[in-house]
Image 1 (cartoon, helix red, strand yellow):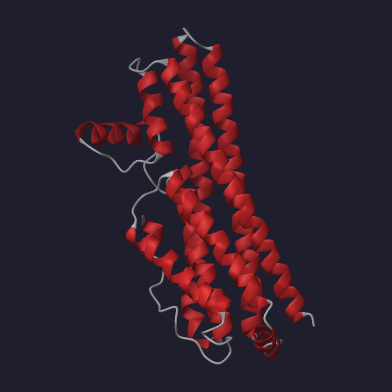
Image 2 (cartoon, rainbow, N blue to C red):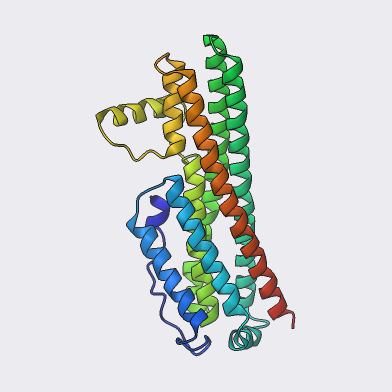
Length: 284
């Protein structure tokens, strides 16, 4: 996935005396988790909900370890010395950006789940009414188009953030460098999540679905569950799929999105916890 390929390949293990000893469990844990997440993101092209759930689970563990690292006296002393520096401002801005993009992503997933629920209700009511089915499916696709606009705007912001972080990386002290790397890889996962719902700047409407259908007919496709659901809806609209089969697919997709929402909620709580820890360090 494009999001994975743009993750910086800078080594995670270059650290100065600003960090606790490499033998400290939480220091080692953070470095190991960063390496695993980066390696996993670069190695996989999967955009399935199960793959995204695993990444979110790994992110939650990473941010939990970051908070443990921030509780260490040596870490706090190192950050406190940078009290009035530009590095501190970057760290605090970064933690706030992560919270903001997490909230945006949660909002997109919540709206998507609501659209799926409404479409299921409409399809049940419109059984046997072909014109009614077509109208409901078209309304759903319009909502998807609006999601794509939101996703494009958000991903553009994420890409700009990554570029700015790369430009400033050499100026940062070691602890802040780690936090910067964590922000970078977290943003990349958010980009994957947003692209799962709607591909940014991609062809929209039925033309894209027709292309996906041609690919799926020729062999395996890398389409995720949302795109596969779009294919089912296209088939239903053209009379080549059953309502009951489509409803079952919608229920499964709703369940997948619900699972991702729950993982996002857990990650959001950890991001808030890290934000509070940083504010406590810099305010003392």
